[in-house]
Length: 424
Ligand code: AMO
Image 1 (cartoon, helix red, strand yellow):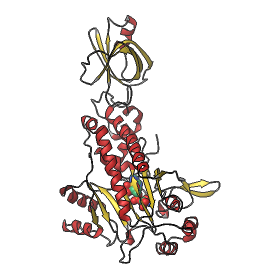
Image 2 (cartoon, rainbow, N blue to C red):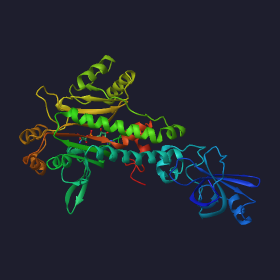
Image 3 (cartoon, rainbow, N blue to C red):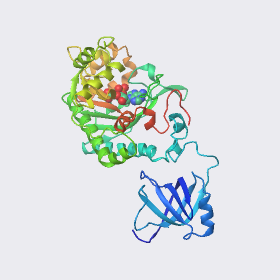
Image 4 (tube, rainbow, N blue to C red):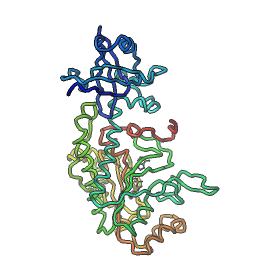
């Protein structure tokens, strides 16, 4: 604290004039509270005083002033103005109430995302998102993973043909990548461990609070593993690391802003698919299609059961091979070296050990009804010393949603892409 003159730039979120003193709430930097600018008529010229009295909420301003020796504002930071300059005024009243008194609905907030970002609670989501990306890199670098960028315009899909967005590619057909699956596996023939923070493009006609047509994922792949449990160890370490870092750095602030963050995750138990079905059926829900994936209701019931046992996060392991993609390693008993990671009833990640023996992989493709000739470039990589390997794909948006205690994925994506949102 001193008398040094400081300049801040930002937007006016609220203003109040009390006699000869005015208070402007300014959102300036990425800190998650407003700055209270105190303007005293006696300390600024009459011109500035007139301007401040009439200032419109939402204006972009530059303020020069000094920090007071003692802050009286309950909101934390304070600046006593010497000069106020209005850089831009809103043409119309703001579409989102930045004072926070009248909450806007999700649709309005999405349409005017850039304005809603002026509210500390919405800004916080994207500060947390950027941090989550940082913690991700922190973790994987420490574990010896190389960060890679695989193509998003591709010639073949990994998760089934019906869900691809088609793109005209010089008169031919390309697709938007649904997953880095094939590429991260091919890399296992040359690099021991890779990870990628990547978009997933999926063309299903989703209409749920947890699916988007463009979402972001964290993909990891590691070679020289003994089983899918080695992969789960890395994934468990990952979610525990990021949940702890977010809690340390933002937990208090998030709670102050009204979030109910998940906090630091503890041990993550591994429940088999069979056990999971047993738990769900005991609670009166029959899982249709024996050997298939858990339906939404089954996921929710299992989530409730695990919460009662004190677990927010848990793995479901050893799914029937039928329920899993061709690249997952099959066991002789019809099960597979696979897993899903769920947090409170929502699938966050899935992965497993891969089939690295080329001839078995080839017959797996055929058995799943896929045409091996479309996967020629991929199968080629299995000729040159492909080690046993495995990995996972994790929904970055879904993880963030769960860590923040939110219940719609659109809240954590700046400009979500689904069937009903392509603009802005
Ligand atoms: P999967 O298809 O299960 O696996 O995707 C991995 C994780 O990504 C997230 N996710 C989505 N999030 C939002 N909207 C969507 N439409 C969406 N689709 C997927 C989920 C999901 O658990 N290649 C495998 C992973 C692997 O085996 O490495 C894959 O893509 O959180």
